Image (cartoon, rainbow, N blue to C red; front, side, top):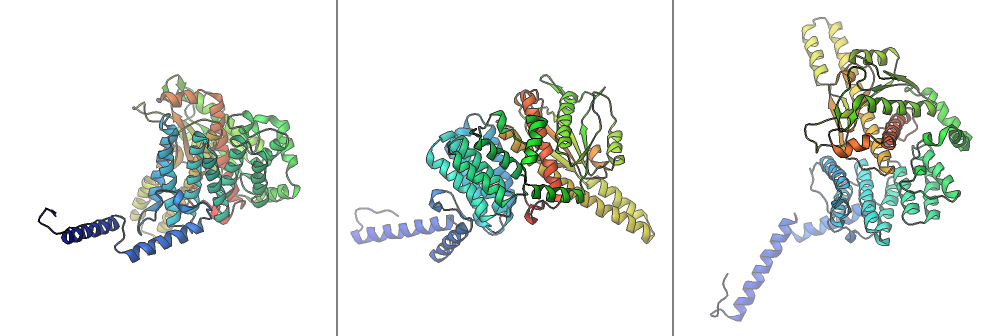
Length: 494
């Protein structure tokens, strides 16, 4: 519309008014609101859902917080945000920029506020807190640190039954002590864990960290004391006995009774390759050497923990056929199988952790073919039973893969290392298909990537990886023993 000199003042004002109305309507449509009434309804729902997250901070703090439209695949968005989070952590330059962390934080919060009554919301809120903590560690401002603690506290307040509730309080304690030097506040978080979540996987570590604070030591991020596991491997057997003695007698008896009834009693640890098969060799890394070292570390942690029997496919640099590895696991009556490997890729830029579980496609295809050939009802029923057992094993293996990956990443980070995560994946590896129990294959880094290779050659990194794998096995065992709540059953996204 052209407002020339021949138009009256009234006409010009009317034209401007109409143009503004059109612009307002367009903005409303872009925001997904077809009317002021709908916009008000969405705003009210956002406020109500936000309240369910138990965050005290004003929602206006989060600039891009919003509700997703109905039908949006929120889990896919979570996975994409999680991948972006791993990439950002691994980026030496952007990892300390404010904007990327704020955008990721708000993206996770938007998932949580869209579906606040689900376990996905709890995990998304926890990830938002992690993003804010990363930002606070770089910016080092009181406001950013306070917001990180607020988000962690909100996880425990709004979702006390979720697997992340105790993890959130533990992260808050470590940040309070390490960055804010508020050791009494950190101690309060740790006491909260021991009182509210006495049977959680964070409780033993919380007790040890609380004891450290009471002795006047801080929870430094990279200090050796920080790398505490449920069995205190680095502290030696003496400290292990002291830690166990410090635990409540009642809790210890309860856990022992539950472990006695647990279906997880024997674990096979498989060090990939060996002997005449060196595996992949790049950047000074020989796979068979690394996998054996990590496997023995994992086994040692589990043996000293005292409630599992460990079986090794090899304890030295010797050749073991793939078929023999699964035979050892099956013959020993193992309840879990964990194979450890080093990854490689034609691209030297590819890096990170991966954990594989069995892809049932090939096995199901074979069973379906057998089912079609069998004529008797009895034979068909037998094949159907095998298909059910296969599906059950695959689902259990996926849960184990989630536990192992989550704990590996957690322990690696706690020890001050940065390692990307490529998630869990399915594959028909022989050692996964040939075992009769839940089985996973952990790829602990790419030797073809210079940064990963440097970490793989670091004994301290390998110890952190081993602690993570062992903790993942123990977390799975705890779930099977009934030591975790219903929401920690493994059906939630880790």
